[in-house]
Image (cartoon, rainbow over all chains, first blue to last red; front, top):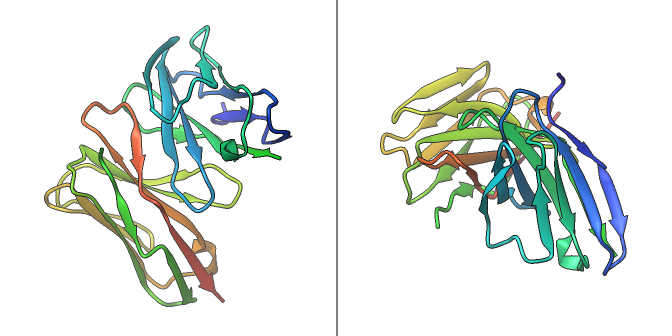
Length: 112
Length: 111
């Protein structure tokens, strides 16, 4: 296993379109996290799953955002009706319970 | 809301010089982690400090956790161009369910 992977690495979309990102965690990790990082800032927590259960969502996660982890393995993050303010790097991380979180390379979203 | 403040925001030094990055909070964290991030990539863990007053060394990097577990510092000795990057500190809450990141310190080491 080579670590956390994310797909796509880059996404350019027009305002109003829907986008979906995928994250594959380290295989033995039961927790999966999503963070968002805007230019020049540190990452901000969005949500996390333990197995298939979504246990916490940040206030940053508006109604246009939805995340799933249906089988407790990979996760998807969907943004509906994208806005220019959604442009950011979306980072996924995984861990075994409260152990160290390991990050993927991120998906950079640009909304035109 | 638990906040972490990093200083300075940007540091430009010559190869061979030393530097220190600070991470401060008014909140207590169960542990604190330092990451380095390259442009277009995800953060890579450097170290985790857990015990108040703890000092950890990673080659030329020295990490210290404050006695009250509210602050931390990263000191780089004899910096090299390969040390260039964004250094992020992140606090772990007692629940251990998410990381709270500082704003990052961008370090540029010029040859």
